Image 1 (cartoon, rainbow, N blue to C red):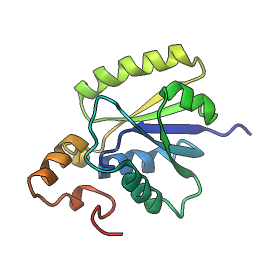
Image 2: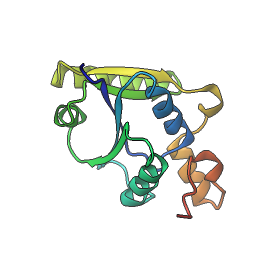
Image 3: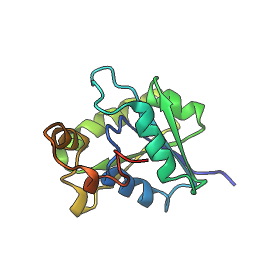
Image 4: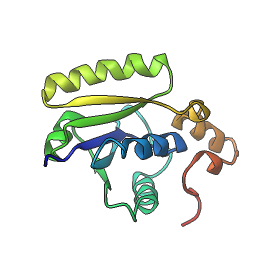
Length: 154
């Protein structure tokens, strides 16, 4: 039987409850999901990439259907390397759709076997974005209620 393997790419700076929701729902469709933490040269990270990888790994450590990887290459190339035929993405609004639609078309052009699956973010989580979370913590606010782990504790 052919396994349905997806990658869920992002910078995850930080990985939020919205991201967790997409992965949890994605597991109903895919046999395996790689949470792929990319390094976007246009973005200066707030949280150390290795800290985020460790937090995500601990979150899913009991689930053999989820792996966490770092990558620094085209997402379409990573998909080939991991034998993934799907990219999983969450959409909060029409702005996300415009951006993600363009990326999905390029990924399909680069890797004809690749399909992008969009899941609409659960309504209660739609306002959460990594950018807003970084602003909250930057100005002294508590962000843990927006994350599926405690960022400050092990």
